Image (cartoon, rainbow, N blue to C red; front, side):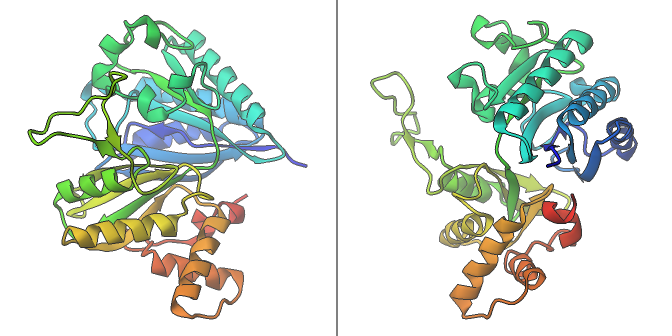
Length: 343
């Protein structure tokens, strides 16, 4: 069986197409590495790339792309809606076919060591590749973002796994690891009031929101940590952002295990929360690619809900795309978004 790993690097550049094309050219220059998809977002000032291939090819493509990003992206000038800690912000390796999670952990370590030693950039490992429990969660590793990295890296508890324990202003740090297939999924609202999107994000994400007293102060537990009110969905990270280009706000989510919380479940939860706040969910988008089964789950849900007959596979996928409003911001092409149709 052919061994295939997926790599989904996120670069902190979403406006300059020439920079992204130069980065992609480096990735494409590696035999066996195939770029399936790249999506630039001006509001996030971020580009998400999907690349697949054998482990050795994917690691080399990741390194070459990172090296070019280091040359062309200056984090001292970067502004954007999405959290980030470096020019090449996060580089996850995901098992697709004929490989295990352990193979992806090995790939992340090989890549991280090479970046740290040859490019002189601090590298942190997360998720299944994490070297300690507190580094498993990407949000925790990235806490403080680029602006807080200079102080964070001085703390021995936050010494990088590879590379120098020093702040590199131009590049920031790289985060890499191994994880299950994650769906970057965003729900659009009919308002540009980002506070509504932020409230919904807090209400649906797994970590929920901080408990506060009547004066707005955090309520602390006996363990010295702030108490939280859990969110309604499992295996979900979320936040609210403003999309100036479209003059709307958006609930931006990572569905870290779509078998636990699928896109349609997240969409319906956001729609219910929006209604409580006098707003409305108008559609959604998938950034990068999506497993076919995630959309088939949505098709089965809406067909059952509305008493519809399920037809052939492509028809089911089209139904899911329609009900989730996946073409609201840009056309949703099954051939370019469903990973099984692309490899």
